Length: 189
Image 1 (cartoon, helix red, strand yellow):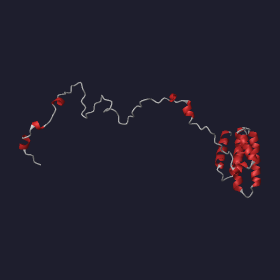
Image 2: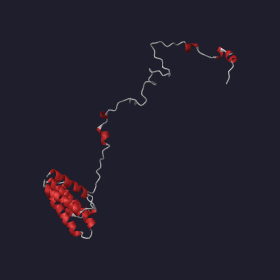
Image 3: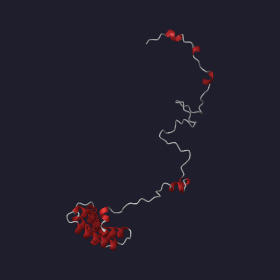
Image 4: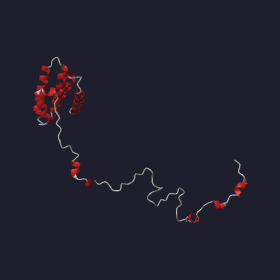
């Protein structure tokens, strides 16, 4: 593009509509000039504010303001009944009695006796149904061993844990029994 010098010289300064008032403001050395046009002194725009800095909340959260009534409404007021035993376990009185003695009564001697009965009964009643008896036998042996731990008869507990590993090799509790036996041996040898 070629511009002719003549056209530029013919430029009329009156065509520019400028307000003389706007241009009369001078910036002193005391004032900081912002080339971006932001006024740092206003709350709306702050050129120095970090972009990822979160805004402060208007009112700080005070936990003490919440009443106990508001928080207590979040608590479940109705107890949900859960059966502690499966149908199979319910049908074995020695097992249910042993579990109650262990967990609720903390009577570990009685629990040892009743878990022993549950093991004998389960083995005797289910000769062809190894899988069904395995569940009761495995659980009974495991918790009987834990009862021995509670009564400080560690050698007997280790024997039962090891017996569980051999008797119920495919049950999920065998892994826990094996670890427990190893830990007890390491601690008490």
